[in-house]
Length: 177
Image (tube, rainbow, N blue to C red; front, side):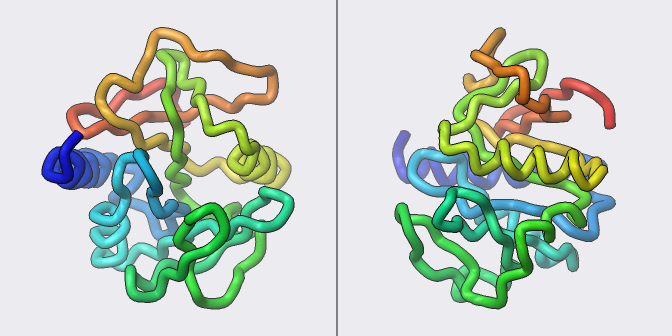
């Protein structure tokens, strides 16, 4: 994809995601800063902040678990391990995600059952397990490119299906909250 293609996909992804009722009603959203070939999240995060939504961003810890910080905008992000951009403000603790109304998840693909294929580091598996232990039931939404919603992806017993996948051209629903 060209730079123009990527920018266009990011804008369309943000517009499509903002149509979700779950995001329209959210007070707190756990998001992430896209890296590498991931669909861009900047436009979506900026739109959420403009609506007054509290946006949390992950901070990768040494053990691959995630702490969280508040997204205060692109000028408040610092380069961290593995080329990630993380918020430079105070750490809110790994449990902060349990207060999110929506958790936006990165992924490589999702299947028609809502099983998400991650990058294999286990960080978001830990987040999802933490949500379960806390009894938290946020909407789980994976952000993908068109063509990354597949018939089937490999899954494991501990995988928690997502509720929806958003691509630049569509919203795919898998299960209700």
